[in-house]
Image (cartoon, rainbow, N blue to C red):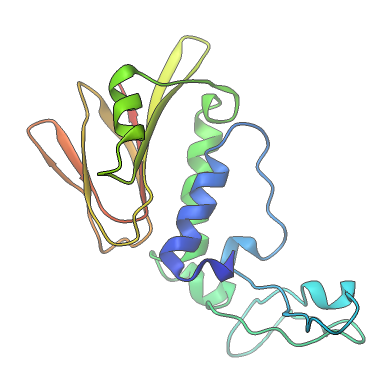
Length: 194
C-alpha cells in the first residue's frame, strides 16, 4: 500500500478495499502503510526480504525484532505505529475508523450491490471521478460515494440521505454540504443512509 504515492492515496485504497464485500485482510504492516522490499530484477525472490520486522517506533525501535537472515532493509515512507497513534490524520487512525465502520454495519461486508439510474449516469460520466452505489442487507440500505480524484472536489446530490461517515484521504480537506448536496474532497468516501 505504501507505493500508492501518497498517504491520502494509501488511505483511499485501504478504504476502497475494506468497504468491499467479503472478508477484509491486512497483511501485517498494511495498517501503517509499511512497504515491501524492492527486489532487484537480477536476483531470485527472497521471502525473507518481502517484509521485514514490524515498524513499532521511529525513535526507540522498542519491541522490534531483527530482520531475517539475508533480508534486505526496506525503506519506510510513513511513520511507525507509535507516531501514527498520536496523529488523527495517520493511515493507522484512518484504518481504525474504516474497520470500526465495517464492524458496526454488517451490510458493508454482506450487502447486495445495486446502482440507481441516477448513480449509473454519474458513474458513466467522463466529467467526474465519482462512483456511487447502494448496498442492501436484511432490509437495511446504505449508499457509498467514492471520489477517485487526487486533486478535484466533486458534488453529489444526497437526495434525502444523511451522513453516516466521511472517510477523508486528508483530514484537513473537509467536505461541504449545501442545499442537500455534498462536495467531496479528493480521495474521500461518503457513507450515507436514508
